[in-house]
Image: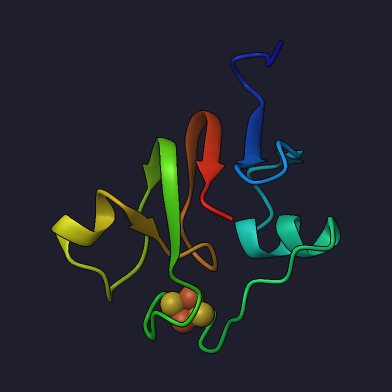
Length: 90
Ligand code: FES
């Protein structure tokens, strides 16, 4: 059971769960667990890291995706989890 203050990413294809702290990027947390997301700008500007998510509350911090895209995709280099569990389509 996840405490309300804890943030977690779940990988849809494997069910793997990864704890994420607010001070690290989602890309870094995933990379530390062996899941490499391609990145380029690391600033929310290029869209290289664009990743589809299935559920979760996302804090979108990029400057590249449209509102419509935000409903389905996030940029894990700069965007984060608002609370709870974020399920990624990976
Ligand atoms: S690496 Fe450029 S938007 Fe994430």
